[in-house]
Image 1: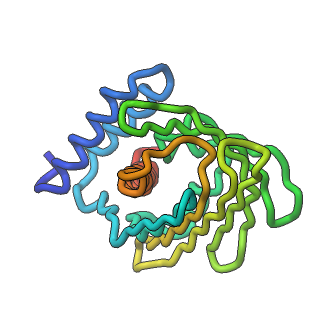
Image 2: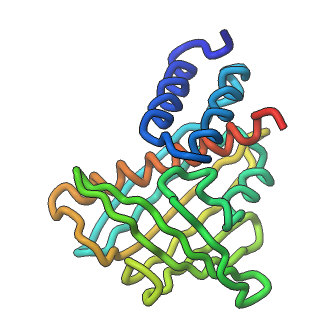
Length: 212
């Protein structure tokens, strides 16, 4: 058995949990294949981790910062997060994504639908972003207010090589146009978005190491 130690057990249990909560059509088949790939890999091949995270808010505007280490090459991570028609493959919270237009050589307009659960209430949230591909493996995404469930928002990704792995700094400032619990909202948002970054890191790693 290749999955040894606490990290390997955590990855295994996490993947099984995702299977049990996401049994549906092609996603189930795809996730099963990735689970098999995980079981066939040495535990050292999956080492994604959250290095730091924080969230702040002023009124209805939230600001999040997450730094993660992804055990995959820089180019692989960049290709994965800019494959705009297939973002659901690396983030289970995304139900669908679509490249709508290319307004400029370095800009893409992208629509995505995300399942957001706050306590026991779940909502399908739509967002449209103008994504700018910048030099130095940097990406900037600006919310188009009329296009979804956010009043405003700006997100940044900065990727940096860390040996054979990649360090990703993700920051996001946004104002949702839907209800967020006033007292525990910041904690819930930090927990959800940090978990999404961790899941994305794991899914990119599995895609990198699964048999082709």
